[in-house]
Length: 339
Image 1 (tube, rainbow, N blue to C red):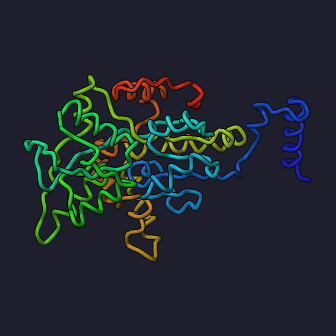
Image 2 (tube, one colour):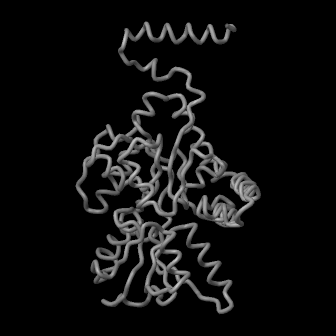
Image 3 (cartoon, helix red, strand yellow):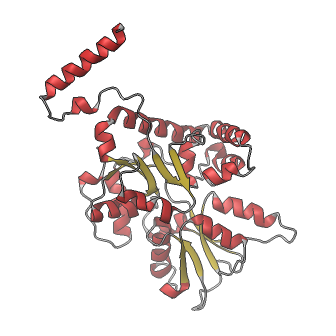
């Protein structure tokens, strides 16, 4: 036995003795677990930029159908981490006692109400229709609140259709275009604008409302929270070193994607170049092409809305403030958040 292996066994033995036979302890949860591989799932779109160099990682699942492929994961222990709408899933975790805690807010809202048929000056009519996504999500919830309470739209449930994800809204907008309005998010907004303007008969896409601007006007400068990163409590207890390393690397990538977006662009371009089956592999995996990163993140614009860790002083305050703005009286216990 080499000296390295012997030293490791001594360390393990001492840790187990210090706990007492059969008793769990913090030291045991932080034993070396360098080989533990984190499994996580996210929707495509904005949150995936936080994983720009992980395209080839088989432990990461990304989906353009988050309502069916991401949300159900909270009811299982199949993943070590889940990224989705932070506010909606905090309520899910709390109400249904899911085995997850919010560890990070990784993005704020980049939501827009757009139309090929109407402008901001057009009054909303009773027969107008809206194509939105994920009814319980922050995008739809902030839209409904603004439409009813601040734009004074006479909006009913019959006016709004909810898709499983923003990718479906994009398909409808680029396809039959049967709706009066569409709720979209960056980077879908920029991609759709480019595609519509490149047609033989170009189509103008009007931004009717920037929901971030409207929300700030209505709520004293407040922001709409978006994606949250949740960790599985059992995984975190059993593999704390690996989980902390995963979180730290995610933090680093977010900083890089904001401050040095060319690095993210290069990683996405390299991933796409490795694909031998489809020119759209990056778009399928991440929800956007590499060029969109340069367009939206260049010169510090951060139009993906990523959040650096030091920009969020309190995980719980973000959720509580948004709940208050929505008129929901919700007390989020501290156990919902990774301390």
